[in-house]
Length: 537
Image: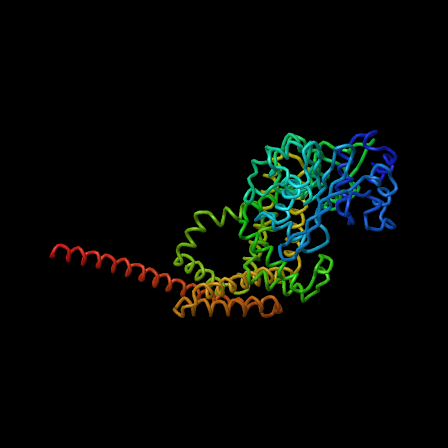
């Protein structure tokens, strides 16, 4: 397999008159959009590109070639604004006569650019608006235009062209989306894709993730090989070329289907408002520390991680993140369980919830530490059994495509191995169980403190939630740090707390029922009194 750099060297001496523009040229020009240019008036690439080619084999090949190095560049536009969250750049390459290629830059190293990528999932970005304005300005009557870009640049190419006026769109000969996401259906009118579908080519690496986000039904989709592995295949310079054309394969790598499936399910389950909260909590935290690039953000250390966790807790975004591993392991099962009739019945009837807590608390008081071990063993065994059934189900749906579903098998065998180790090792069940119990108790405490925030009135519910939050938080922290010798006393304490919590919940459910009945009764009495008064008058 040859590389994009090899292609540039092969075609170095051919102009676009001698060897007409093709889809590989589109990859080269989309890559060039990532470089900096100083363009005050039309100038050749080798004269106006400000990056050094000394350690960049791709750029050196471009500079040394007649085909690309002598290409004229004009209409260079770059917008970078932390205030509006915009990282945008576009330029126009003069192929020959009145034929041009308009290239949109993808995401660079800046946090502004990365944030803009995620913002696309819940609202129209300033970069998308700018792309439309740019195309409306530079496209002129009499010219023929190719439009393209890589990653976010590919999204801007399709967003900009499908929102063009009819007169401008007639001048666009073809559009290339090189592994870029499509239009978010909650944000954009996706039917606008029909305006450009016949002129749109989507090029994806064999292991594709980004180009499958908000995917559209496009007839011309080409899958290309890559010299990289996994997610790194997103790097456009790694894509393969064969005999001057794309080195294509017939299908995507089955291993990426699992990630695509998890991503699609997560996006379906997480609302635009939840996505916005999550993005703001992450990037506000990272950028508040003074980081401007993701490299600087990754060097933030413990303090940066602490601030990030704090922001995610305050914005209630942890549960949004938690849906990612949930979707990976259980698909839609947990969501259906939460929205099922049983869960709805328990949530709507605090009496039932209280009875469940009392029963569990009493069982823990009776069986002591054995109840803890039994619950954890049954829970983990159930997860392993569920993963086996779910894997077989997905395998059946894929017509027994073992290669395509191998990631699910890896997950199942990993879970089975962990479960076996827990059963064999003496303290393993305590360590794993402590982690699970600790997380559950801290989440329960967190929900109780949230209830305080929503209802600050100091009534029975207020004091119940306050005490519950403090006790469960203390138990959660203790079980994560305590030695196994304290398990019996911990289970006795937790059992007593859960039993008391259950009783308090039952009492509170009766108080609420009595208040509801009193309001209804008062309403009826008032209605009878009013009716009686009307008759007497």
